[in-house]
Length: 254
Image (cartoon, rainbow, N blue to C red; front, side):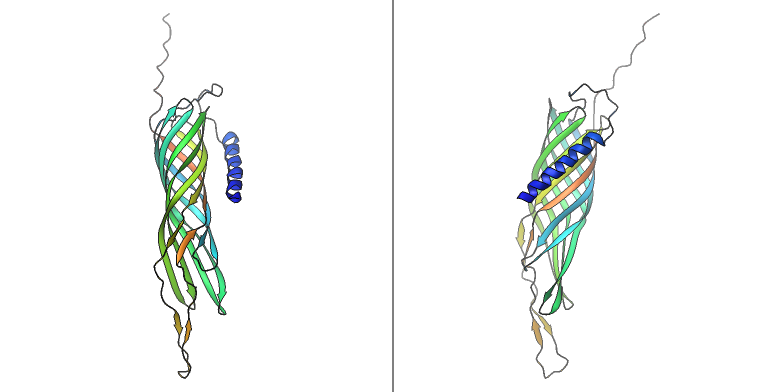
């Protein structure tokens, strides 16, 4: 739990710093801390970034996975004074993968794991000021997972779609009344899932028929468990609608 809290503290500081100093200011007049952007409406956009996790299959060790994800998001939200409430769905392609090799009965046992196709459906609660929006989010999460072992040329693979929950936070800044950029962190708990019984033991036939075949039964995945998935995404969003165009100014009659 302490590691999760540390991640939140560090990433929140980074998000606020980048939002405040790195993003360009929108070409709209500012009025102190009063919100100058109407965040209400339907929106869609692109997101991409980095993720990492640990995958365990109850064989005595886990495999670290990491990689890049990219996809899109769509949502709807309404603004009430400074508060912004909405719901959003996002889907990210790509794969977090990793491998490691351990020894079993004097021979290498290779472990491979991956997480892919991440779906998040969340509620969002935000606070708007000036041209910025800071928000928290929580909801449903789902992803494909795979774990395989390779031993003496024999491969045992298990796949499962895991379901769980997610919680995160982010910041956005408007660069026009309809286009925003932002950064977002998500913590995803996909839980675990029992797997079907894998293939039986490996039988290695001896060259000399007078010697009995060697029967080996290396550990195989019987349950997939994801020990916390973390993602950091950059976001580009377009919001439909916006403030009505201002009426043209009329010159006084001469």
